[in-house]
Length: 223
Image 1: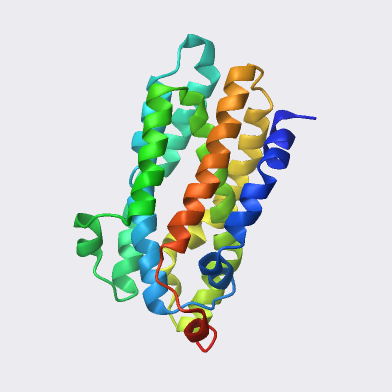
Image 2: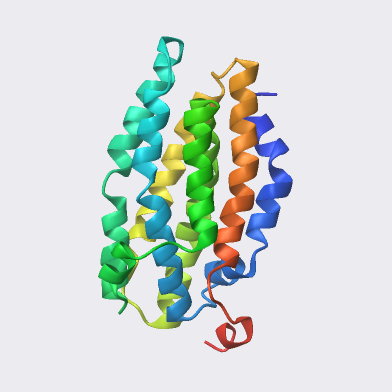
């Protein structure tokens, strides 16, 4: 069994728990209100704005034995730079207050997820960052592939309100193919353990972020 196959198998329970969160389930079916979509974008901004700093911290914490992974992180950094601005643009176009989101705080669950990732890559093992990459890219594929079109249709919002989500469909599918190949080169048991551990924790923390988003299922199903 390859390491990527292990990663998928050994995080299956946490992944299923995330994909069972009502806010995410209803989101991919377009059964959310505009307010819920805007609240999701706000939390997305707060964790996406930390993606490049996290990737940079992980890269800078790696030694020469991890040169290939440092190079991969350079590629991720180049591709992820500026995505938080796409989210602010979507907020504005969907009728939200982008400046209030930019200057305001995240919800506690989002803050905890980001803080955990910063702590782990700096204090324990920077290779753990790939566990977070695995969770976020896999989830964004699901949201982009199914959620953007469904929410757009349900809420009557144009494609200009979904630049962040829509951009991550094909893009993150390509990323995941690259990611799988990269993970299959990880041979150090300590690095494998770090990636698995962080992936499990981020699945749980990311689920908490989604659960924190205001969402009324009865109202959503009437949209």
